[in-house]
Amino acid sequence: MTDRTIWEEEFSNRFKKHEEELRYLYCELYHNDTQAYDYFMSMLYRLWQERPESLKKIDRAREAEPDWYKGNSLTGMLMYVNAFAGNLKGVKEHLDYVEDCKVNYLHLMPLLESPEGRSDGGYAVSNFRKVQSNLGTMKDLRSLATECHKRGISVCLDYVMNHTSEDHEWAKRARKGEKEYQDRYFFYDNWDIPNRFEQTVPQVFPVTAPGNFSWCEEAKKVVMTTFYPYQWDLNYANPVVFNDMTDNMLNLCNHGIDIIRLDAVPYIWKQLGTNCRNLPQVHNLIRIMRMVTEIVCPGTLLLGEVVMEPSKVVPYFGSVEKPECHLLYNVTTMATIWHTVATQDVRLLSHQMEQVFSLPKDYTFLNYLRCHDDIGWGLDYPFLSQFGQSEVPHKKYLNDFLTGRWPSSFARGELYNDDPRLGDARLCGTTASLCGIEAALDSDNKEALERAISLDTMLHAFMFTLSGVPVLYSGDEIGQENDYSYHDNPLKADDSRFLHRGDLDWNKVARRNKRGTVESKIFKNIGKLEELRDSHRAFDSTADTWLEETGNPSVIGIGRYFKGEKIVSYFNFSDRMQSIWLLKPEKYVNLITGKKHNLPYADIEPFNFKWFGAEEFGA
Image (cartoon, rainbow, N blue to C red; front, side, top):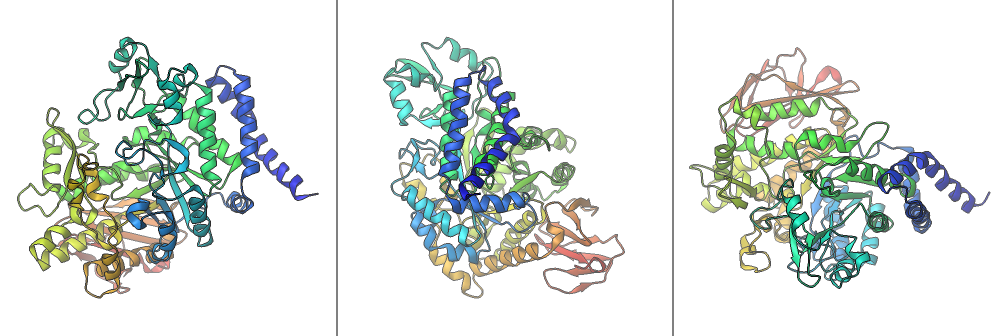
């Protein structure tokens, strides 16, 4: 039997596994359009044929170990290519540093071609087959991915599904009046139907980009633009759109991308009379995409960007029988962590953890302290109301504290998309600046600096304690502060998110090896956490997890158990020393210091934590 015959059988077996469901879902969505379906199937076969053998070998290895991304071995890093190293070749040249950070999951922020000044940070793609010229070429992307794979590093890339740039070839032809291309978007002759949509569809950016539609002067028509006027929503009710966008996605996979981050996935299906969010058709599309990757490139993961409350997020995992996304963001926990920093009250965080711990262990979240975007205060206000907290004044307090406006606040951040009418705003800032490192350095306050470093480390320890994949934001590993230079750039000045998107300071990177520096302390602290997480099986994503009772509103305790090993962790969100009683009879070892802990209680310094392993469980 020839290798080619084996390969053909490999594709056939994968396809047969999904054929019945794939045909049913596709034909249900597209009204039995068999011509479109037949093209879709031939496209999948072509893309599988084009997939390099080196990637097919990775596929087979991951098929044999389908939970390869779970466990406790993956640590991610999120970066903008230009901010990290100028271009893709620069990233490749600095992979030694990535490895020094103990990172084996590299998330490259949007890098496909998009118009300067009208890109929303790369999220308005004008060509899905071309890298931004200042960052390199598709060949450079493939070369970087190949080198990453040699080093055991997986590569993640954003895939913008909901819309294209108004400069995309489809949009250009639509503007010229070609109906075939107008049908790929949502074009209307007048404002009648758009106004009916506006009655039920919320606004994403009510201040900076109000409304969900824009007037296209060249076409003399109205076009749907949910996010910004230069981002035209794609019409996924048109099978040509889904076929071609799936083709574009799989092309990226064939260039070596291991994790596809599906941007704004809840928005991709529009239906008049609804809020155009989380519609059933969205889940059918994502289910098809999951099956498609399992057929063409089964080593690929789908990461869903669903920035909503848990009840809206969890359904995107699908079911055990019919899974959708492999990974989802733990966005509510991220926001709740910063709420806890500002209030020094762990009750909401504990409530949030109870919800997360009750979910099936098969659900794998990405955990993070901050991302490229802002921090939105989508908190559980019904829960907070029992403590006398009301949504609008509470949001104002959080923003005042974390921007340094509140008396005695140590945090330094800026507001994003401030809407005084609704008393709402989101928050921007690097982890270091929000933790007080920037303010302490500015005031030359050594005591405040040590406390800020402790808080920064404690928050990372909390992230590493959670099940799932922890992701660092590039620069956080050395405590990089806010970058205020964006105020002087006319293309960035109106978007405060650039406050935490500054270029990596390689002089600071070099100081990580200089004893006593801020950079050295944070780099070594985070590195120690990564080593411990990787070496202790109780940090496995499928471990049993629970809340440890502390009886202290400023201290949250988390227990973990897996295959005979038990770890209990305590995090003090207070600026004062706190004591907690260890109610269990085990003897403990402090994982950070290696010292035995025989007392029935533990003192936890301000903004600090303890990781304890129970001795008789083999920690």
